[in-house]
Amino acid sequence: MSGTLFTRRIEANIVNEDPIVEEIRQYRAEHAARYDNDLKKICEALREREKQSKKEFVSFGPKPLKSKQYGS
Image (cartoon, rainbow, N blue to C red):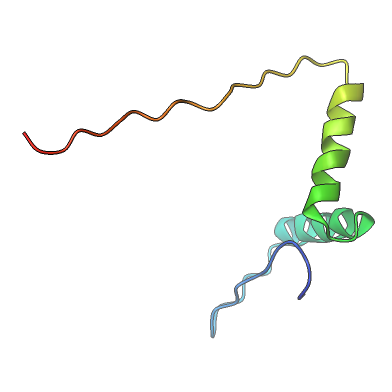
């Protein structure tokens, strides 16, 4: 499926058909299609859904980088 947010790698002679995996892939494809396969739109929709939720979400800021010391 070119043009979608995910790809599948199929080895030469190995094709695993797991119905659960296929169901998840189908749902993911349908969900991405609702937002024109645009990751930015999907993230915006998820953030909006998060705001409307009654649940408390915790967000940790980025960790500062430690400076590296070289030599002895």
